Image 1: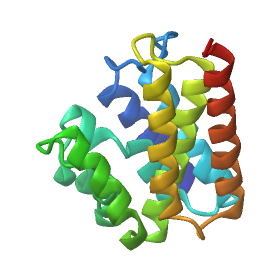
Image 2: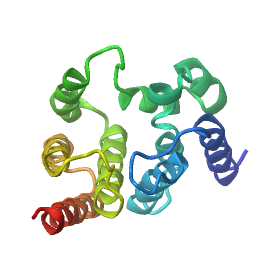
Image 3: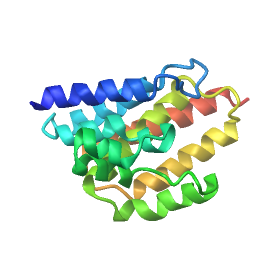
Image 4: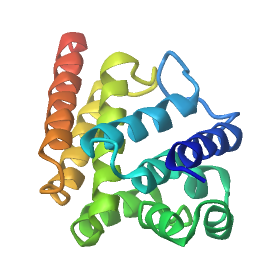
Length: 183
């Protein structure tokens, strides 16, 4: 099976697995949009030369958010991709504050691939905070998220200058969007 077919199969699986999910933003866009944006960012950052990374990006939230198992990912897409997905999967049995601390503490020890997905994921999330913030997120919560995302990304820098620039621009836009609404 060629790489394009594999990527499309992963996009289809992501669409099926996340069909009922919506983003938290005011626009309530389909969650698949986030997965496609993360995959697009890593595809562009790698010049399209790393289809396994694009596939892992498409599937990066499947275990964490919808209960797909590592074994299902491995069976359909291979052990390498499942390993990358698991590397970026938070342990949802832990309290949210603990998960956030662990992301900061562990990112520097992750593989290059996991760091790239983290970078792209945080970039996508910050873009959403700018364009369509969650209605129940206060200005302070948005600022706190930007600060936390910067802390996570600081631990993963050095893998893609282009992707890091995308993140930095998204962080600046998120701060500006909060400033525009803070009266």
